[in-house]
Length: 493
Ligand code: BES
Ligand code: MN
Ligand code: ZN
View 1 (cartoon, helix red, strand yellow):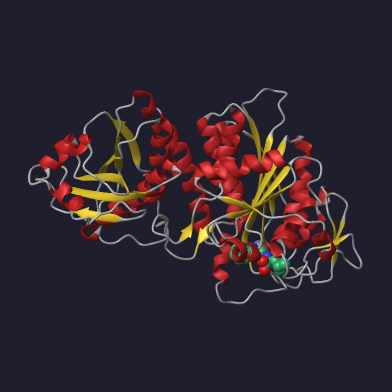
View 2 (spheres, rainbow, N blue to C red):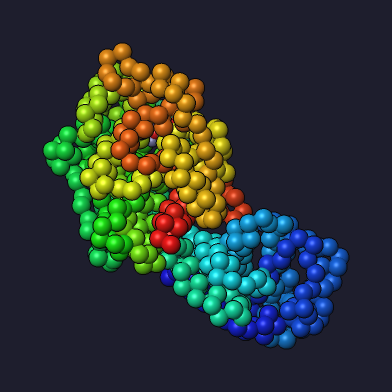
């Protein structure tokens, strides 16, 4: 059951739930709104702040247990907002931390107070709470009933702004789109197969009356997608190219296309990866999960736009039939590609999906892919790599990422990089080696995306986390769902 979030016009001292969360900025004091609450708590809040036991730093939490002697709230959780330049981002982050803490405390319900007004805040808090409450326990045997903690079932945001209260409706569309992306990413490769992703896409299409096309191996052969197919030739699983069409814009308006890399497992193929950490390559479909999560959210928001979601999904396996280093294949666009490294498979899949996107005459194409380890080295887990030549689209994607709390950082596309992927035998080769690895991957993709404004997001570092990040648990983050939704929403206005 997803967490239910609502708003209520109520003062912090009159909440009727056991856990009250107060989100406070740096150098917190007892604001006029909180004076009555503090009195009810016997002055515990004021004393805590006076003694500087809680300073409101970003990610700081302090739990006042046994808070009110009488009735609710029995517990107060202070969460720090820091000194944010991005107020909505700080609220989203703090709300996520609060929901995670509430789950640890076994609270079934919480009330949230941050003293701010406005729909952007309410939406951000809602998304944050939903993100924080998320977990993936589908494959764990539940503990015996008497050891089970209550689930966090409901959250109420204290907000006396009628107009802002409406935003609470939008939060779940986005939060649950992210939850879908995270669940798909977390699912192991033996369960989340290309076929499974196609099933999820069909379910989204049915729910929102979208048109859907799914191409399997025979159809990809008919389409002459030699680049995509060479990646899939080592696996017995049926590869899938999925196209979801959401049309709620003007009939003549060109669609935005969102494209995702969907490698349900990337072993590297014949250029096999080292065993250490290879299990993380189940996350190599986070771009695809992001497209599906975003399409679901966009449709639930009912945005008046035309959007096409495209997913290229397969697994990359070594076998007797697998593609070998040195092999040359012909792409859908007609360009020949020398496969230098079978582990540079994402670009081979995306080349054909980008070329397929032409048939939708898109106004813009944005792809997201866990494409290169080099991007993780360059930007870590903090920002996605952003590439593109269309200045307006690049600016739009960067701004959308900022609004969504999913920062991107632009990386360059110098012509010199093209030299690195020149082949002796074919038009182009799929790997330029280690130097500028994120940029050469991008230069490769650009060869297949020349007919429309295009931006590439390298989410290898941002789509999942290998350690607990306080506001996000170890595992998938939901990136790039927020960026996609914000981009489309920005264009819908
Ligand atoms: N899926 C990987 C990229 C990746 C690495 C994602 C680490 C997340 C974390 C991709 O298919 C890959 O293997 N890329 C190679 C390219 C190289 C062979 C040119 C890489 O980055 O090493
Ligand atoms: Mn690879
Ligand atoms: Zn990969």
